[in-house]
Image (tube, rainbow, N blue to C red; front, side, top):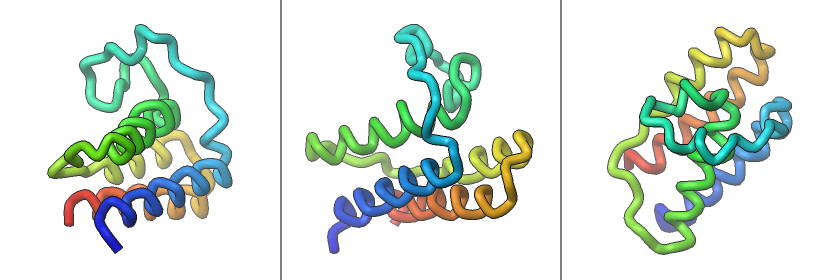
Length: 109
């Protein structure tokens, strides 16, 4: 299996996990929200919004275009901190963080 195929599967799993955890159904950010210069758009989006509309969307776009993938990805620690802060159910925290770690691992390998 190629890295691109692994990443596609990891993104599918992350999307499914976010849906199961109730973190997929979020409002679409305004166009201005995408102009943020802050990491993870923390000043304009919630982390679930960023995961859905920026992280997953951009990675899928790179896959579709056949463009180069990022050389490094370390999103899981931020996701873990956010989920703990928001008191998301422990089982959902674990599954979501594991899914994001998988995406990180595929990109970093």
